[in-house]
Image 1 (cartoon, helix red, strand yellow):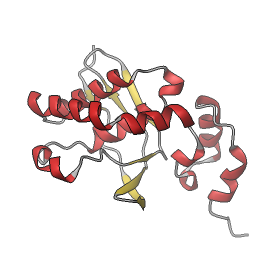
Image 2 (cartoon, helix red, strand yellow):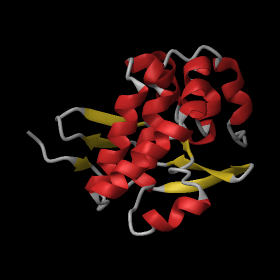
Image 3 (cartoon, one colour):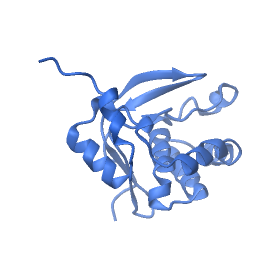
Image 4 (cartoon, one colour):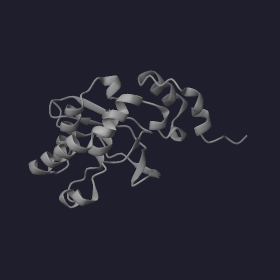
Length: 170
């Protein structure tokens, strides 16, 4: 069985700020192999908050790099309507990933508890909306990726993708 961990350190770029949260564009698809051997994927172009831990709790996690676990957790919440994953399992996965990134068992427990308390709104939004083009920075996606995501994530509102992509000069 493969060792738990991430297959690469993906690149991110700022997308925009929404309220108190910054959104980032995931520039590379990356994967996480879990302790149980399952492989999870976060698709290129997806928008993520990179784990929005409240400022008042941030001091407890300042030595844990939670950005990769946060991006993967966002991706798994997003596609849970496709995969059938359960919220509790994905929240437990986030804690596991933070452990792989150096978090202690206490930190993992606190992160999991924080998601139990504060993750409901994000989960509910993902369950209600499903995957949409608003979840991606479509300006960076290739035509092939758009076709793949449309099929893989059952995204029907393809017509506005052209409006979001930069115009090519003639």
